[in-house]
Length: 302
Image (cartoon, rainbow, N blue to C red; front, side, top):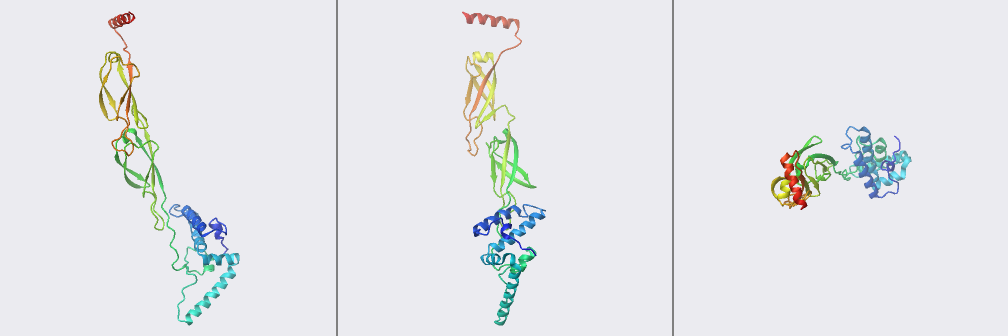
């Protein structure tokens, strides 16, 4: 039964305050908790050592005794055993019932050193085991730009569990959304962890998205560009009729207000759509068409 350095177990020094002990225990217990390290015997062993160290060092009376005897714990244990026997005899003489020294309840979770040093009984009314929040989960969801144009519901499977969630319109690529309580189970009555969902959004449309504005190019034939007229153009959610002014130049931009992409969590608010005209020159001209263009060219030089 070797001496156990509880300070080393908790990775603190002997001058550590109660707050330091609590902080160190919570940090390491979370790291080695069996729920977060399934089937890991070393983590389970470390977790038991942490609990044992915390039971002693977080209790001022037992920490004092531990510091007093240290590596001379065997002699200290004999002394404490004799003292307990004497107390028991005194209580029996006075009609009392012996309740065990210091109130520890041992069991298989504690080392032989602990049982010998502290009498094998956990302290009555001792503090409850520290509650820990469950592990946070991280997941990714791959969507197309069209999928996030409108708010919709979707079912995800995370760690074998189906989660029904609402995906708001306007979610951006790379955006992370926290879904409370959908992570791992808490320990010792602690709350569940959270789910952090990262959106990977790919654009397979003919529209370029910049913040909340959409940009696209529409082909315009030469004759409509010169003479003007009406055309039908695609927007993200349907078609619109556009009036083209006579003499429209190549690259001319038209702004369609509120025809862009929805703004995240701002219902009814949209960016704008910008359409650039790309004038197409006629090809495979007939002989007569070439003659007419030649006549036009002469008229333009007059």
